[in-house]
Length: 483
Image (cartoon, rainbow, N blue to C red; front, side, top):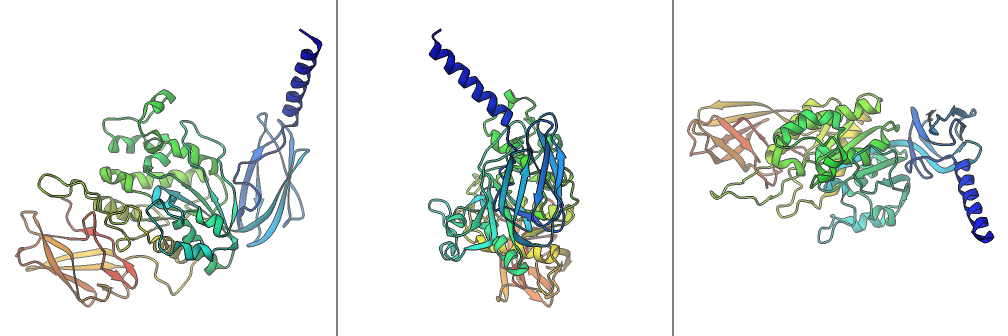
């Protein structure tokens, strides 16, 4: 071995050793400059440093610094008491070498998750645009609205970090950000007049199951996939055809890294992938929310979700009937709202598209979710945020009489005297189109083909243009039968 080679090896080893010893303090990607921290609460921040090193955290809004000691693996965590909304602030973290986070705002932080209707950005998808997006993007510059998009990924094992960057809202960043989440955050910022941070972690085509810890999912998995099982080894996981959709892969890669972060709540837009196995969805979604809340350890934080919009899925039987009716999934979401404490559902029965599963009206979805948060979480008065719910169905001769809860201003047919989205059935369980009209706060329904109705349905099809409202909020599709 010649002398030059020996010197080269020695230098390389020395550099590697120096790098290992250096082991500068670092943090997950979402703890970085430009982020928003939840106001007036104890917020966890965490990261990695030299093993057993003392870690000091100084925040601009507090006189005294915080400190802790990293464990033998270099992991550390500190709780910071945050002030009322404001900023920008600087945070300094050091284990001997300083990491500086600047332009930090304190305000309201929300997690935004789901599948493609949450993921679709303001620029849309090819051939699928977002209504009014370019004009809204043009006017989007706002230093008090901060955006973080998680890069897609899946994993069999839980991860500690994600790929993404905090950005201030401006035309360039907003164009690439979730449209539903943007409209949600924009309205919150406008009404509350505080900084708002949005963590967008979604995956197009993902199932509810993908966002759950495998320990919670076993019972629900059996209901949804009776001929399959939750993968218990990485080999089983890798053999799955849609492993990033129907296992816990997205929980591991895109949710687990955030668990414990201080936040106000979560919004959710998902369900289209589960429409062909709807019967387990309400149990599954409520289990998912309970699991998230248990792991976060900050109580029953608000959880607001969008009911999937109508869409003509196009699966028709030989008899000319819909092979799978997504109204059953909407019904499960309707049931889930009643099962999940501190939750609310934004009904989108008027905001779908017959031929596209990604409706253009994302402002409608985002702002209805925001209204739920503003009224139910932030206590804004004088505004209606919740759609009415079916409360009674009575048969009176050949007429069905329907009543609702949460309808103080009574239901209406959006300016029309009647609706043709209703069906009734007799003892033979065959549904026929029916005429519907209003009588004060009640909906009256009747079909000449059914003399003695026993069941009624409203908008209970894949595709429907909802026309039953209370004020400006649509009523969900519903049925009185359980056939």
